[in-house]
Image 1 (cartoon, helix red, strand yellow):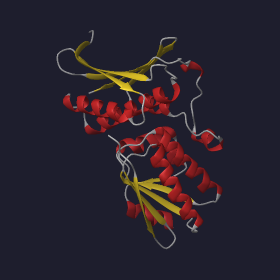
Image 2 (cartoon, rainbow over the protein chains, first blue to last red):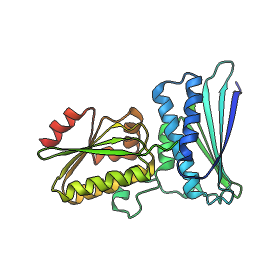
Image 3 (tube, chains in turn red, yellow):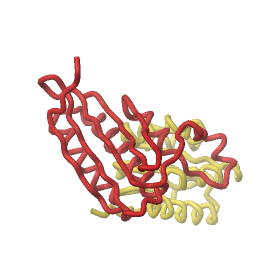
Length: 143
Length: 116
């Protein structure tokens, strides 16, 4: 059966330090509203933080904005929270990204680059659309 | 909106416990690293990070913790973590960090294990 969007909320955030906290607080409030368990809420919160930081650090977006769309999906009752984090940046090719490992990072000068791995580990579904129009991370978690 | 990090230290015989309170982002990670390197300069080779007061971290902050782990490996010291939220603990496992710095459920268990 097709999922219906029962509720939608959009945020437009300036790319300034700690804007990820504002997005994570909105995610927390919506996840609480649909009675997601506290541990799962915390996982959503962390994934949103990472998606916003990725946009802040890597998008090189001229407009310096990130849009975050929250959708509650379900047939009649809320079943899933979907979050889309979009920037208008230069895009990237997710397929060519090397997956970070601790072994590799311990030897490397640059220790960063964990965001997508963390998001994929914490959320139930993650899709990345990236191109000339920017990047959208679409991530979902069942209630 | 800002959640800055407070760091306090409890120096014990052969081990120092670093307590954090707040968001471990880049500034928070740097604050922990500064504290950890000062303790290494003082001669401590076993450090326990008690994150009971930290409910949120980000990957930039964690990447600075990885620098501390690298340093501890280099000097053959010990670094452990305790009192993590389930999500922070899960994140450390996703990253493989727990293989290099053990995670303990509470401070007593950590201190007992790290002193042995």
